[in-house]
Image (tube, rainbow, N blue to C red; front, side, top):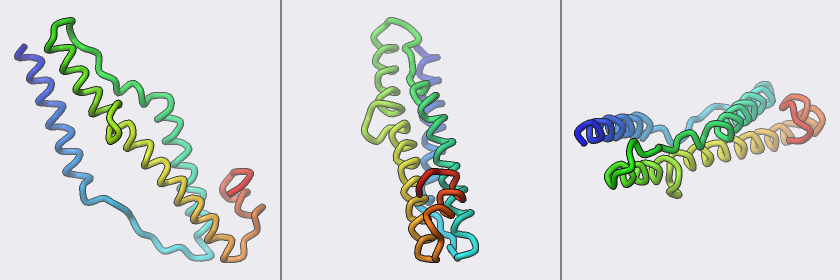
Length: 132
């Protein structure tokens, strides 16, 4: 029982530190110009795609298995799974939302490129996609 409490305390402390470290990070800013809009879009979209592949492949690995069959173990695992995977605001879903935000930003950068006079083909080529 003591070991389970130590593990839970350690994991909770780690998540508390993560939340504290990232609390102020709500958005970043950068200046988009005609000269960098295609590169920015390519970078944002490629990072969103890379993260999405990892999230799809490994995201469910966040699930915690109970270390035993006793009531405390199963309840603790269920509680951690709520925080990590199952709740609407779980870490799994937060990562999904972040990916969606990156993809929306890439679309906005594609739209900005159009206003700078780039063609659909130029944007698609730069982004490495069939369409932006």
